[in-house]
Image (cartoon, rainbow, N blue to C red; front, side, top):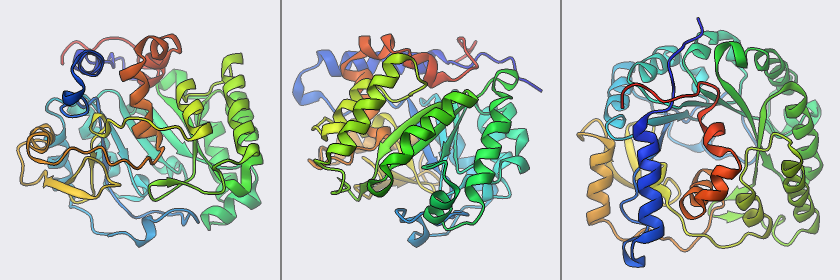
Length: 353
């Protein structure tokens, strides 16, 4: 069934607006502290059915919560936080993922986003009735290259086949697909064919540079071919290609310019319910949601008690950089149509917060 629920919550818009006021009009000493979360990211598992050559997840803790505790974590995230991104690892390898996402929808998270490699999507088609956006990892349309990167023979053909298939269901089901590509120094020529593929099948496209730890990959820094590629993405975005990145983000990652991070606009929760503050990169755990009243309560305590969190190192991850655009440049953010795109295709204001 295609759901008719209107999928933007007043709380989501209110948190966006309050953050803009805080960042633009408060004194510098107060900025970067108690920003209001607009979307929480629940990294529900570190396990994955791929072994990407640049990814550290295979070496991470593989422990997970039982289903009942996962649902409790969702309940603790929801107060004060209107939107949710469920990521991994690969969420679709979990036998209880359908139940988890249905419950997240029941709790009223909107927009509700799923990050996936899309390998197992045909086993979980029911989720298309509940999610607003699918973020699909794909770095190349060349089967030999992508299969080699992820260590799975046949992965490229399978993922691209699923993308073609489910792109046709976006309007009927009311969700949006976004291809997320990591720009790799050895495969710069793969990015524009991916964008062409996205445009052809009617999905959006997002590109991010490879980041090693906190730093951009050194082979990208000062690389004229990389800079030319990002310039071409900016040009094609202006021409109407479905590039989801903001222009400001692309300009900043082209030259790896400094920026001020507001990491807790998109707070991160780990597989065991741990709350990372200010981000997963820094690695400090501020609490565990199985032992806390809510994620928002943990963040407010961390704002009061933890050291100021401007790390001085710039990771150039879009989940941290893109919020800077709407916080510091809201007019251009709206002009690019990103409020509509962030929400996906289930548009409108929800009836309750």
